[in-house]
Length: 82
Image (cartoon, rainbow, N blue to C red):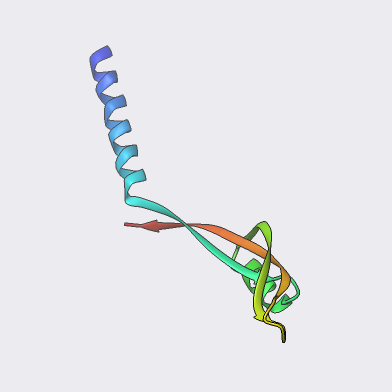
């Protein structure tokens, strides 16, 4: 009886391994300026979560120095089948 119970547990472990192996988890990352509300709302509607902040520069001033904006780092985890 104990041997058949152990075999059942082994089969469950193998089945679980293959179930997990079939799925891949991918992290998508996106960055945007906080003042760009349509972009922030779009990311939130797509289930991205704010995970950090950073200074972002897209433009330079007349002296060639970077113009910085307060930006957000948004991420989401996506489960993809193999």
